[in-house]
Image 1 (cartoon, rainbow, N blue to C red):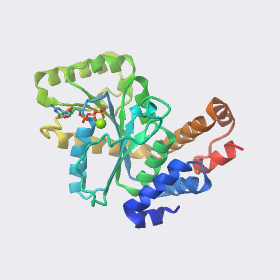
Image 2: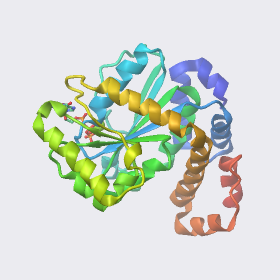
Image 3: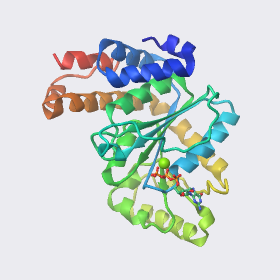
Length: 296
Ligand SMILES: Nc1nc2c(ncn2[C@@H]2O[C@H](COP(=O)(O)OP(=O)(O)OP(=O)(O)O)[C@@H](O)[C@H]2O)c(=O)[nH]1
Ligand SMILES: [Mg+2]
C-alpha cells in the first residue's frame, strides 16, 4: 500500500486501505503505510467527547457544513462503544448524516471501540494516522463515560468536551478530573433556555473549585446545533486552540504513536507485551515498524 496511490484512487483507495489495516493490522504492508502517513504532512485531529446523546454528532454535522463550505477536507471517525456486545461487527453509522456521496472531500466511518468501553482500538488509531495524512481535519467522536475520555487526549491535537444542560456533568467531571482533559468545553442545546446558562455557570464554578491551571485557557461556549447558534464562535475557539497547540503538535504526534504502540501490543499480546515494551527505548521516528522488533 502506498499513500500516493491511495490519494490518487480517492474514496475507493481509502476504503481498500482501511480493509487491509483492519484485516492485517500488523503486517509489513500496513506498518509501512502507517510509517508513510506518519512522516507525511499532517492535518489536525479534533477529538469530540461527551456523554451519550449530548449532541456530538449534531455538532459534527454543523462543523462539516462549515469546513466543506471553506473547501477543507474532513474525515470523521465515530467510535462506537456498543460494539463490545456485537463483537466488533461494523454497526450502522452513528452519524446519521445526509451527506453527498460524491463529495470527495468528506469521509465518514463508524468504528468499533472493541476492547474497552469507549476506548480506542488500534484500528481506530491506525485510521486516524492515515486520515491525518489525507485530510485537513480528522474529527473523532467518542462517548465519554467515566475515565475513558482520557484516551482521546492521547490521540487528538485538540479536545472538545460537550456538556448537556441540566445534566450535573459539571460536578461529575470535576470529580473525575476530566476538566483537565479538554481544550474547549461546549454546553450543547442552548435553545433549551435558562438551564443551559445555569449549566455554563456550574461548569465555570467547577473549574474554579478545582483550581485548575488552565482556567483562563479553557473557553466555554454555549451552542445550539439545532438553531445553528454560536457554531462560528465555537469554530473560532477551536482554531485558536489549534494554533496554540501548533507548537506541541510534533510532541502530540509522538504521544499518539507511542499510544498506538502500547494499544497494539496490548491488543495482541496482553500485559506480557506491555512488559516487553517497557524494556525498550521507543524510536519515535518509526514507531510502527518497531512493533515487529518488539514481538520477536
Ligand atoms: N434541542 C436540541 N436538541 C439537540 C441539539 N443537538 C442535538 N440535539 C438532539 O439530541 C439528541 C442526540 O443528538 P446526537 O447529536 O445524536 O448526540 P450524540 O452525542 O452524538 O449521541 P451519541 O452518539 O449517541 O452519544 C438528538 O435527538 C438530537 O436531535 C440542540 O442543539 N438542541
Ligand atoms: Mg453521536
